[in-house]
Length: 96
Image (tube, rainbow, N blue to C red; front, top):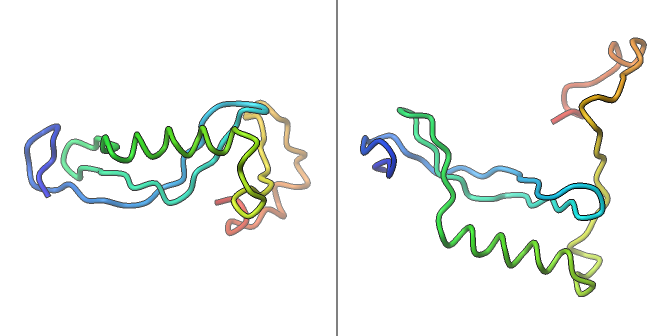
């Protein structure tokens, strides 16, 4: 696939998780298609993806989102102090 930014062959589509907003307005959306370039390193979202993300964010922030589409998520502030004893017990699978 040709990169829209650098014009070289090497773009590919992969899925990622994106977070938008903070606090009570935080919305996490999984499986977002991202266009990345192996050459210039840019990550792009298509216009179609951006429009769909806008619709999803509005839907999830409304009172109309059903329980099946909403689930709790752990959120930590980067500045949070982590007790040294817990550093030894963190499993890599549980972090990602």
